[in-house]
Length: 148
Image (spheres, rainbow, N blue to C red):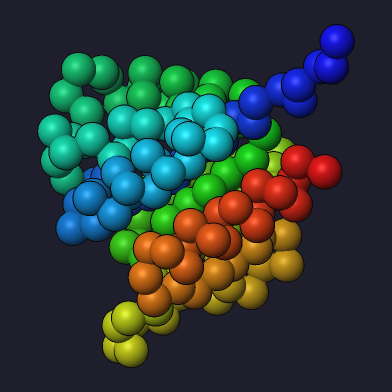
């Protein structure tokens, strides 16, 4: 009998209150991830969550729940194109927890650049992509690199 490796748990981070213009992109990335790993934060891609965030939970409860998920995660995948204070906070916590972290940035807007605090951090794997297929290929590479 062969034992299968445990299924990786991924904390997917992306903007909610910072802006929901990329919500459909988040949903597609989460759906793609879910076919390969367990995504602890699937709600981030949910179209019913607007820029005011979740309505069913108190802010303290969201904070505690998300920290539990971040602690339980094997790694973090963050879509960082839309700046978000919450995502920045989560990335700082992930760094302190030594979680392998992939930051995806859609490089289509020449007027806006990714924060140097993200792109310059040697503990983060940062990938600039032009379409979702490129982002998905990088996700596969990242998952393989942390599964070894």
